[in-house]
Length: 192
Image 1 (cartoon, rainbow, N blue to C red):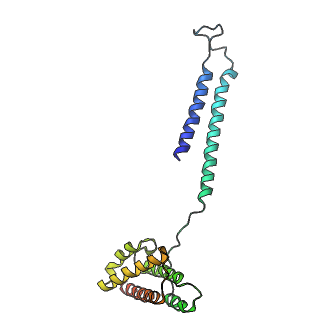
Image 2 (cartoon, one colour):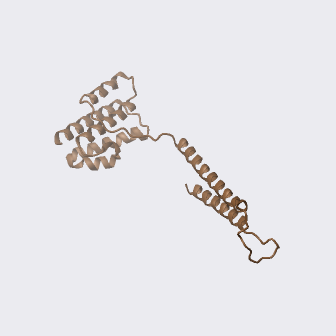
Image 3 (tube, rainbow, N blue to C red):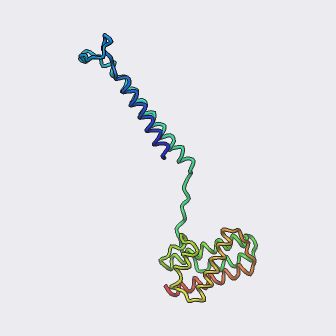
């Protein structure tokens, strides 16, 4: 953005310099004195305005094209889907999918995280899908007892390892995550 403004300022500066340079005239006899301007033809004064207008149009065109190019390069922004309430048995269906082995445990745990955050968002005033794990644990603290807070903190850290560090959970870890998620959702639903 700053480079475009600099480019526009330079273009306007050159246009103004061209207009000023071409508007300086000398007398017909070569002296530097004053002369009567009533006899100057309009065509002599038109050139600076045409140059200035042309450079201004060129600068605007270059700015417009560069902005269009920059928008294309960025592509379509990714928008987070709003939290939606999932069915009560969606967590149980995911738990059963662990034994099917049609999907990896990692993808199932990531889906579990999405479901739990959506259900927490519906049950509380917390925008769980937009919170970091630390913010979510802090926001859920009033709803939970001390033991459940510790379990939730460990659960959220586990989800972060799976989502961001590429950890592939073993069946025991995945089962514990499903247990804690069901307890968490049930506890929050009961208190709200």
